[in-house]
Image 1 (spheres, helix red, strand yellow):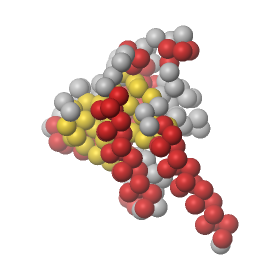
Image 2 (cartoon, one colour):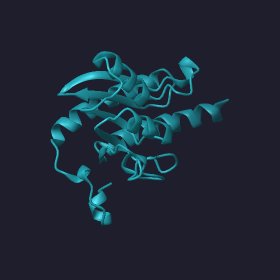
Image 3 (cartoon, helix red, strand yellow):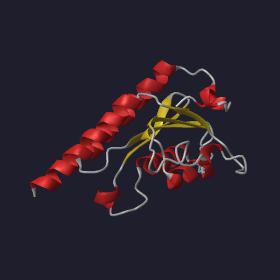
Image 4 (cartoon, helix red, strand yellow):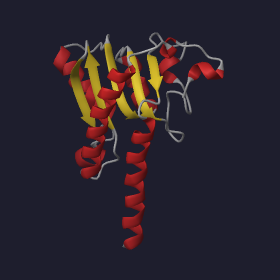
Length: 172
């Protein structure tokens, strides 16, 4: 989604290195595929600082029996461990699906500088679809946001996963 076209101007609309964004998003897509292979909702995330990956994550809620094992939270936790800090200033998080309210809140609280996501989530998205927690002016920190990077590919992984899941349920 292009936020400028809606008459809203954010820092996120600045031109970025789209090749670099696509490259890191492809790595997040690989993690999403790994999640799907494990029977998890296929979402992958990569945390990057100064051009290097400092954390990765994929959805693990079913495997870990943990409601907090969302891909972006796993990637941010690993980034914090790698960097030795909880403030993830200077970190960009790439995630294949627009973050939910919990993950958007964690992005704000951990001071992530930039978020890049692929597919929008009209049912639970909290970075533009239902809410915009990442750029809420009442928060003490706001993120730069770039959306729609490899959106078709990110959306296709989710669509294929849920189509197969529905088919398996019908076959029972």
